[in-house]
Length: 402
Image (cartoon, rainbow, N blue to C red; front, side, top):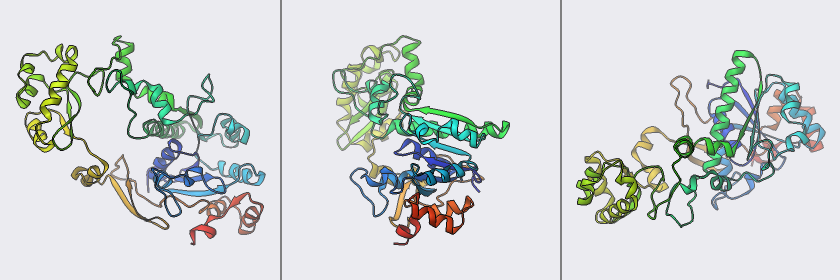
């Protein structure tokens, strides 16, 4: 049994943040029912990084393991009635509809809490449930730009660089996951359900607790350097540096120690608390020129011997083969009925008594419609009628059997 075994989650979300949060709940053992349109969530139908699957594309595959799929038409009265029936016994309802959509569909918190007062209702939005940005698109890169974080690294006068992953989506997903768990704990103690609201703008802003406090409390301006320093509020040298065969990271060492290792005499008399800020560009540039003279492996050996924080700059091929990654079992592997053997990132949290595991891969659209409705009390005749009316889709026959 997983920690959340016995809890049911109705996942009505799309794209990344919502599905990723629901997947984390599924990884902990919750029965996650992905409620999607008859033809499946839109993420099923778009390529991820140019990659497409056989029946399930890579993006959908990565965000929807440990779920069952209920394909249902919420605009069909019979379809909506089935969802409301499931709400009666659900523990968590998670959605990231555009503003106003949940209310129009009659699946907003006020409506569903009347059906099930103990329901934990998690609502994810781009900017909040109201306010001047209510109808703006909550897209990852747009929020990265608004967050201020992109101007905390790189060169002055050059365009800011985005993160190399869907950073805001991932942070929002974990925030929603945390909110769901906290609300479930509150319910265990009090019996009360509640509304949990998470938005992408607040998630990416509050994760910058240290940086923004340096600005708001200490009044330090966010000033980029002429050199591509990796963080405006950390002293030099701090960043990625080229070697003869790649790149390495060097992270704010004691200047005298670094000067000895890289043979830079000017560092030996500099003050770590003054010069590393006032001469940031000079320090970065001199470090950059020195590190160009040896290979990454040579420098890492020398720097580590001097107890200087450093490390390699990996590509994904390097990361997957890293010995610590392998030791940790960071990636999980399993066989999917249509996509074959799958290797994908696994579980960030380890539990000694209730370990997470892959119970099932990402479902086909409507693959579990019949089973979920059967559990809701419908017999086969009633389910057949809903399929015939177009209220639900039974993907177990039409797709899973292929």
